[in-house]
Amino acid sequence: MGLILKEDADDGALMPPVNFSMVEDGIFRSGFPQPCNFRFLQTLNLRSIIYLCFEPYPEENMEFLRSNNIKLFQFGIEGKTESSASIPVETIMEALKVLIDVRNHPVLIHCKRGKHRTGCLVGCLRKLQNWCLSSVFEEYQRFAGVKSRVTDLMFIERFNVSCLRQCLYSIIYQYQGYGSKKMRLLYREENLQKPRITSV
Image 1: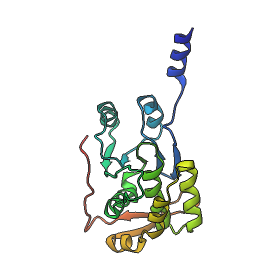
Image 2: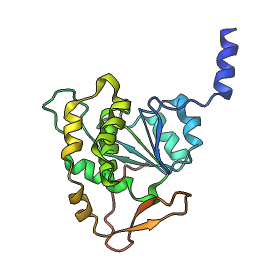
Image 3: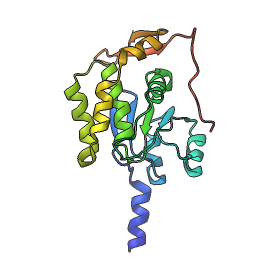
Image 4: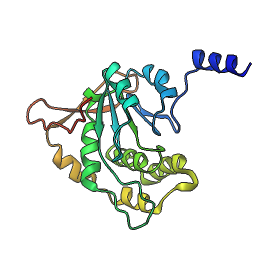
């Protein structure tokens, strides 16, 4: 009977990755996707995945990306818990450039558990979107839970979004007709710097 129930679950259930959530239209976040999550991910029609770990992507996941024509952008960030471990500002900046380019949407951001590294990147995105700091921290802590790190919150607070705006002088603002008319960011075709892409 146990085998029958397992077959029913496999045939019908769509299981999102751990800590999955929508960040905003076309942007999602989660922990590391497992094979049991692939059918759910297919419903998102992803164009890209932003992966925030140093470890190589598993071959089974790479095959899923290839079969669904999904680009993998890998930005290695250490997952250390020590307070001395620093988050590389340059890496976050490069990941943000990929994240705000709507040509990469829909996009999924993930690390191992979808808490700290993913939370830092989303927190910096929120600062770029002019969220108040208390709301940025609340969102981070909602996903990190009891594992919330003071060093991550300090990094987000100190992150200078004006530096990113200066680096992205070729960005223009466009309004998309998605009901609430949210401001979106697009690269101009000219002066475009290609982001690093891990071949799939």
